[in-house]
Length: 243
Ligand code: PRP
Image (tube, rainbow, N blue to C red; front, side, top):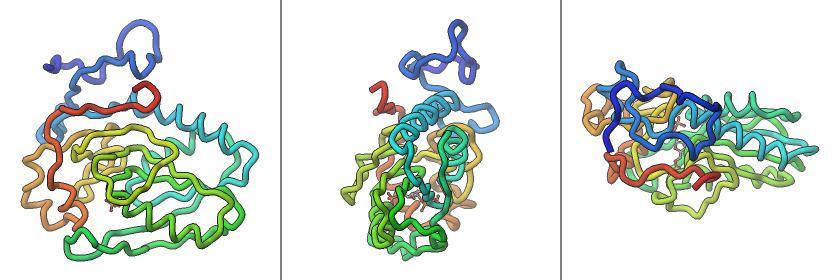
């Protein structure tokens, strides 16, 4: 499927907003200044906004009348979290946990907690928010840690889910998009700490995997992630509301 020149970012004419499944299913090119680094847009700004809105409605319904504490994982979640929070019209409190993978590039690299929770979650409803659920190692360890603090219940919300990469049996209760095994960046997700500020979720060009400026900055986890990623549009993206 070819991309029409200049077609990306153009809102369709006629009724707006469109539903997700009405959005044109075509490869979208990133803006010109990102094209040397980003291959294509996997999830556009409009699709993100629409899905975050839908997630917020669902969360509001499920947590109405509860003593809700949102616990977000640093750093990748910040953009998604900021958008989600502003869509949530219910009382809540917010705290963060800092996690970082540690170790020399092995699959068993341990997690190190770089920031601890400060709020008391005992007897309260916790919504754990992360940008991406990949192998599940991060969220499974965070869940164990939080359970010890005895919340009344704990639910997980992630923007992206890559079920094909799962190692630990973790399931998220709220998922923005189920995606194939692409190396994705943007909307908070990084490659060597770059690209977090892209307003869309894009697929990194394979040439960037070996870029000499970036290689020394890659975490052990990111190096592992580069192995076996898809570099074409094959597989697509599944919006869990519209299939
Ligand atoms: C990413 C992401 C998740 C984790 C998911 O964090 O934010 O927390 O990986 O991977 P997993 O399911 O395989 O454990 P990363 O270590 O890249 O740090 P960041 O949040 O600072 O980008």
